Length: 126
Image 1 (tube, rainbow, N blue to C red):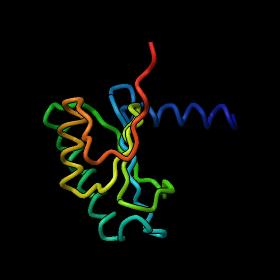
Image 2: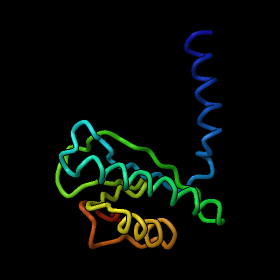
Image 3: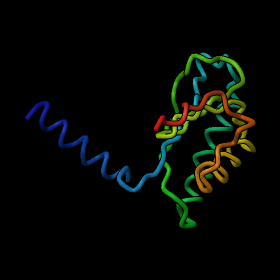
Image 4: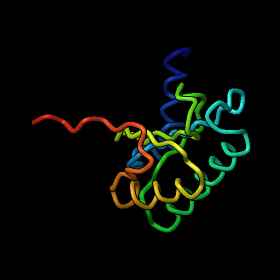
């Protein structure tokens, strides 16, 4: 038992989360203890909006996107901050309106929302 049992339980939980069907994962800073990049109300409002928007997207037949509320990313400016994986794109100023654009343009259409990008990885070299 012990570690192997814990791993088995964790694998079941991961499968239940639907990770196999997920195309992307959005991490949103909701560090209400620090709230250096945006106020607590802004962070909570952004998180609630993102959570509901992604649920609606999936129910309407859109892609499965995982979401995680995180602690501070260490930027502490222009927040709330969101990071989209596996793309590695960091976004700033993630109000509900900006999150709608990220969902529609980036997650659904595959176009990065350039005017809110804080960082994007360099394209792979051939």
